Image (cartoon, rainbow, N blue to C red; front, side, top):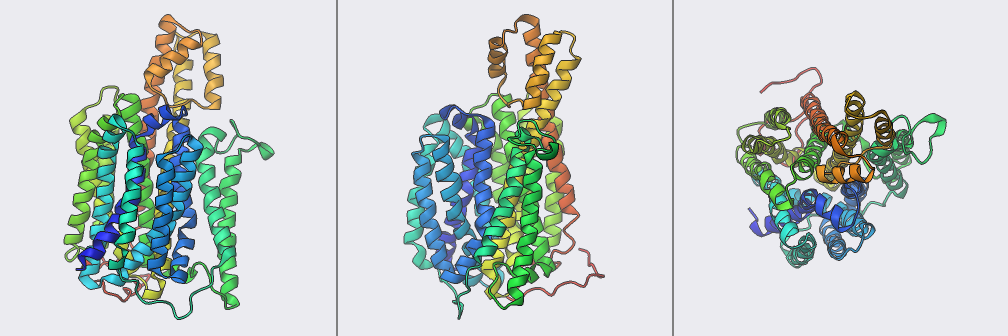
Length: 541
């Protein structure tokens, strides 16, 4: 195996994963540093994944046009600039430009090229192992993020992490000579600008609608800027986004019919192992990022742990993700991707059920950490399989394109997971506290009316101390204030449980969509695609 090549590509994979892990454990510190809200930081986290999801397909096509190694290098340079701006950001706006936008653009070039470069530099069993190792390295990024990011955030500042990323990115660029670029296209494809605009706009609108549903309302308006025909702007964003994505597919078919280069060869989506791999990537990231948004809220906001203490308690999920990813690569010669992925989703579901049973005012630390470890095991089993499944489903010329599709699916899942679970938690918080306060005889009618007005606009997810201060500022005192605060804390737990329950249901839904995954052991997949299975025949493991 080409160890130096894998070192460079693995370092890039590590860097791409580290950011989000750091941000998730630094939510409270970011809120304090920028004098903002959890919802605003949630928006920044979601925007980062949104930018990557929107531009990943275009990034893959630029890899075909420029050459995959060159696209990788340009993307890494852009990423370094974004990390530098993030490190010195002076406001939430600067943070969003540096981290969410510039780093997102860089990553949209790096990640599709990275997957394609693995396929070009490795073959056969080495390729299967390389993709498994990359899955493990991604797990290491998640592992290092909560613990190191938490320690740095607590005792130094989160800015140090992004400053260090600049150094690592420069090192990757200097070592890029160890990576073979692979064959070039005889005729570099033209960029489909119209397709790029339609796909990016459609993805952006869908996720924007989901992100803002907690504040604007999903169907009926709360704080919606406008409400055409009495419906929330969120609904129009989601519907409009899907309409643009449909228009994108018609545009691509039109370009095919007149012999022009397309952004995405839609016929690739007829390859069922590839389609199953993309659905698996999306589902896994949706569940992972949704749970990784809800758990820091429970540990930091409800339990009051700082970023470092949160990282320590979330360490089992990260460690086991790393172990299971590497272990999944090692046993890929004995078990098929379908078996590994199905077992992974079942393991994730068991973990979520366990976490649901432990969401209480007083945390049971050891059992909670055990179930986080079970969660990481399930995710690691799945992540060890996806890269090779998707890349082995197509021929060499389509690998950048497939890399773009895979990362689009993953990043769209990340954006939707953070946004959807975040929105469900915040909507659930408002609904729960409204119900609890309305039923509490210790709270007077005028205060109930004020709470009803506040919940209609949306209640922020804040600590018990912050809520106590807000209640005091509102002129409520004594037993009535205690009852209000108690209702708020109970509503927080109920909202988090609803968020995790939805993640569990998504896991079961994803499990039902795995029947088209390859039934051969991963290490046996060579350069040629696995034959598309017959629709009426489904083998079992």
